[in-house]
Image 1 (tube, rainbow, N blue to C red):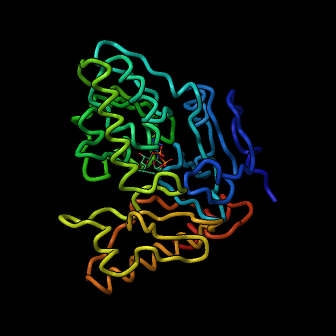
Image 2: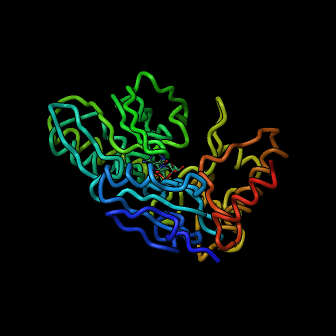
Length: 316
Ligand SMILES: Cc1cc2nc3c(=O)[nH]c(=O)nc-3n(C[C@H](O)[C@H](O)[C@H](O)COP(=O)(O)OP(=O)(O)OC[C@H]3O[C@@H](n4cnc5c(N)ncnc54)[C@H](O)[C@@H]3O)c2cc1C
């Protein structure tokens, strides 16, 4: 039995073995991170990535508001950006924003400073890093409308500065490579009296509360809307609004929200999602695509990172 931590380089931040991840996600399910690394700062992150054995998998987790982590947990090292990555600096209507800050918190701070343009972020529970990766958005706006530049570090520790114009953004997608960790970004708004910005944010929050489940454990939209169609309407057509499996439920309030109603397992949630996909395909011919990112192994394996390597070699 090998201990993952003994293979890893020393770090200044926190490196902990076998950390349960359910409290790191809004669906409140999932197994352990084989190791969880919370870097002290950007240099600590880069130092770790440059020296880690390349065969050990790396996964980055933001606020966990768009992920479903399976019972077997995540093999290798899960990186979680802590307080150093939540710093915000302002210059006029432009902000330098750490990737770890919850976007709603950033929007609130910008509003207090009388800068408009970020109001839509007030209703999204993710961090800036996760939101940039997915081009998160609502109420007709998305990250691509405000982003100027990103700084990212790849899994080998190389630093990349990329202007927003060089990134192709689509509906909940970006061309940011899967092995990059966004660490900082620059976003731009416009000056407006603070009370007006705050009022708009309040209105958006109220609209959200009226139409979507906000007080439950969910990860936002379950499926992406297919071109020109609404996932929730297709789910309704398939008669799956309110469907349940174990503790998992398709929200009766919004049919495209998967909810951990009562002590659901990750398997309950994933299986219910797949059942909905099948029923929708059967009823409408449309193949829905998961918007929620599914991570990890279905059941625990130890040491997980070695099991993953073995699987990869067998598949070669
Ligand atoms: C109630 C509710 C409402 C929501 N409403 C919306 C909405 O209106 N619009 C919308 O777009 N989304 C919505 N979401 C989904 C979610 O909040 C967004 O997708 C958010 O941007 C995810 O950010 P996160 O930090 O939680 O990412 P996580 O869930 O932690 O991670 C999601 C993905 O991003 C990657 N990632 C995280 N951080 C980084 C980083 N720093 N660098 C590179 N990759 C990273 C992860 O590896 C993972 O693949 C909602 C979710 C909930 C629970």
